[in-house]
Length: 257
View 1 (cartoon, rainbow, N blue to C red):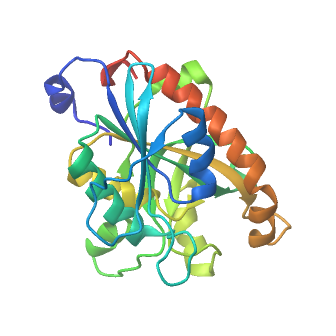
View 2: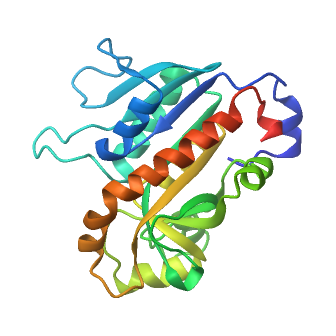
């Protein structure tokens, strides 16, 4: 998350050495597991019985863990959404004590905000769009806007697109969600980011968000059809972007990002 100046001054000026990736879908995680030559851990640091999966290894001077919520134990599909993301983020930070959390994954994008299929965005801010609490102050809590960890050098060096991320637990977009997303000034929409941001902020752990666009929400094609059609190709674009980000982070401390 964005750190106040006083907090930044208190951060030890040592190179980042421990990164945890929170990735919702196995399809999104697998290319990065192969890229960084990570190994699935059989001795879980997580509670017994949960389907969560962890891959770990060393890449350059970095300890890298990729964690995924795994498959739903009843239905066998990826455990997407904010509930799984929150639980997994909390358990991972507690167990693995990362210097930084990276939430990487796919997202829908808005052509009205300049998004195209295959674009990879570095989120500047994250918020919820489906927690509607029309009571003063509770309404702000529901939206839960948070800034991502400030990374101006990373964004400039890698020429990444910057945009705001809005999170909800539905793949489609009802009129209420659309109104909230517009109010959030979002360029990309996912199902996990703001939940990861909430937990990372709670546990005072810096977090950044990399989202690759699989579907154009305000386009002509049905969201589900476009998402499935582009998932493999866009995941490859995400893989390339994440690798460049990790290469940039290697040897740097947080204030150099």
